[in-house]
Image (cartoon, rainbow, N blue to C red; front, side, top):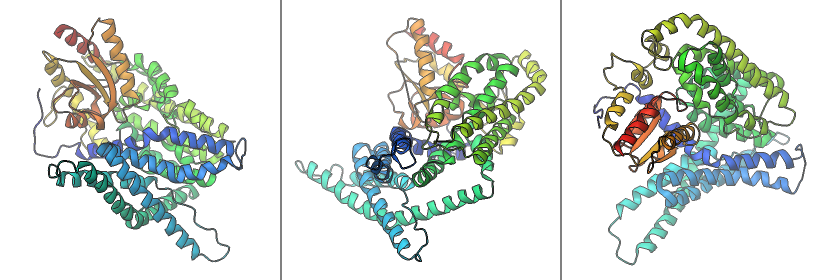
Length: 517
């Protein structure tokens, strides 16, 4: 296989690093979204202002959000690093952070003048995301120190006591410095959000969130900041507008509808199906390639996002818990009582604004796009040189799109196609950030094509990039994520696609596997 071996830092290094960080956060949060949804349902029904108030069952609300969810997140993060052993130590460690935070809050409230509102509990979501990798990585490192040095018959004793002792140490670390640090972080972030709301500047967050989504950098923002802050706010007031900043499906479906009416070629043909998947399935990744092929369309997404946030601010739109995936069905299911009109209107208006602006942009560039297609390009494969200037740095995605002028980054699709010839493929893995949405869709498409071609003995699965291992023979990712996937599994063949839904490379993969068999 052709590989890239350079010692210099690649242009997309910072972006890839942020993506990795976001992927790790996503890996801790996403598997526990069902617990957040369950908590949201309990809150909706049983709190005093819920649909069916019940004082007894409402006692579930506090312990779930304060203890269960942070411990689940910590265990998941520790398991990602060091399997069950890492998960157990991480869960012990986060209990120290929870107890330390509670003590700090109690001490602060004891100093308040009589009649002043006390500070509420700080829920250790961020504490769990700090303690989990810290506890698991250090446990893994300690185990390596005495690996192979334990006398036969003492393995279980050493393993159990070492994990227990180190869990104790990390609980103390969580109790003092980490609890203090997280309480401070939550105070600063909470004050910043309150300031944005009080000054009516919250819509400006779309300037960061919408481009971040397109470049696969949203997980660090969503799971690292918005979900912890939104959950804290929802625990106090029963709802939060922060859950809608990133999950609103309106801007994405507006862009796809604009391509449906004003696009050309493969983009126009695939846009209607992508709109259905994005809006009802909640898989936002399907619209990212449409924006990346013409980055100026990000302006339409920003305008749509700002419209949705403004509508929710003016009319009181909010959710009880995170909407995951970002489907209109999940959004409505988590909408707070009395906020349905505001939330639905925010989705409709954000889609309409994005549609109008994107339609104008596509119509204005239609002749140029048609000329480029006639010259041998296609809507998904064409790119313009000023994109990097607009982005402010080089992008592996744009490097992969260029047919010429590539200096430091190889065209991943061309390399992979050449490498596939003669390769023995038994396991194909579709990989994306969380391993649940767009990669599952791509795996379904390829499985159907292999079955239709009569190919047997090939397994096609989907998983998160962080979970890739050496067992994969062929890894298929979107262009923006191929570099990270290659770092995880350098021995596998890698294929980059623009769109998991409709890539011509699938037919090439099927043909090569069939011929090899």
